[in-house]
Image 1 (cartoon, rainbow, N blue to C red):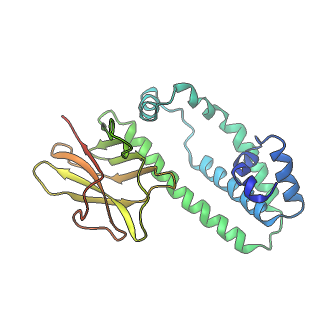
Image 2: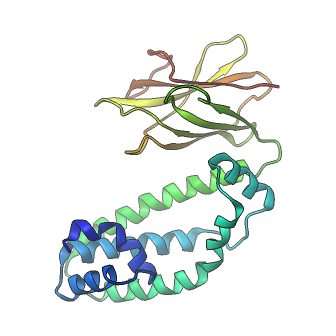
Length: 246
């Protein structure tokens, strides 16, 4: 197999969960000093280790499980993978040690992996803040985009102290120089900018605009396409408008 065919298997290899023939192929690439696979497995191991080191050793509350699973249409049994974190963590430590002793002269690769881990740690911090918002009993939410042909779909969660969380799918690709901008719309007032974000290659986005938010006067949450520097007021018709009901 060539390296491009093995890229999606790096994470499983770093966890010690990859099976043959992919496992044997990656190990063969590593033994002969393949730079692409060595860097890829190193990044996967470093990222997974960093994520586990930052994640709190707690079990999600039943209420949080119900909220998150309901929002994505999953069944509760899918949370069972979390019980395997200790074994996965041990496997990743072994992978990190193994990769760390190989070819220490490649300072450029190590610097790249460090930057990758730092960016992932920031994303994990945001994810933990999003989960904290979801777990608050006062959090309100609204569904948008249902019953229309291929629109952006998802949910908006709002908490007065923690802010606004957007979970969206089916977002259209953006042209160069454009970004998505989130807006909070008070009752009888003009839209207020609440942050810029991008979707992934599949049109999915998770974005948290930290609070505070005056939920007593908040009428709706909207998203429009704006210049990449953002706008003080929407310059295009919003493609998402999620009206909050009392």
